[in-house]
Length: 89
Image (cartoon, rainbow, N blue to C red):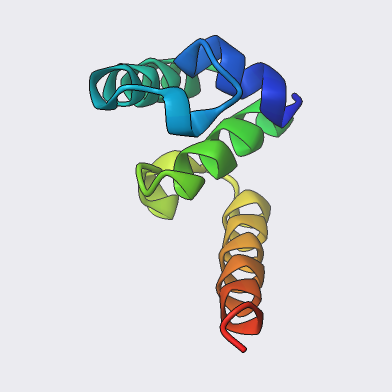
C-alpha cells in the first residue's frame, strides 16, 4: 500500500489541503470500514497506521488480535511521537 494510493482512494486527492472537511470525514469512515473487513495482517496494519495519522485509529486491543501486531503499533506510535519532538527545534 502506497500513501498516495490511500489518499487518492479515500479522499479523491493526494493533496490534503484541497480536501473538504466532509470529504475527509467520509474518507476516514470508509477507511475504518475497510480496516474492519480486511483479513490480511499487513494490510490491516497499513490501514491502522493510516488511520492513526488522522487520529482515528481504533484502540490497539480492539484493532489487533496478535500481540506482535499490537507491539509493532506501539513502536510506530513511539517513533512518530519521537519524530514530532525532533521537528520542534
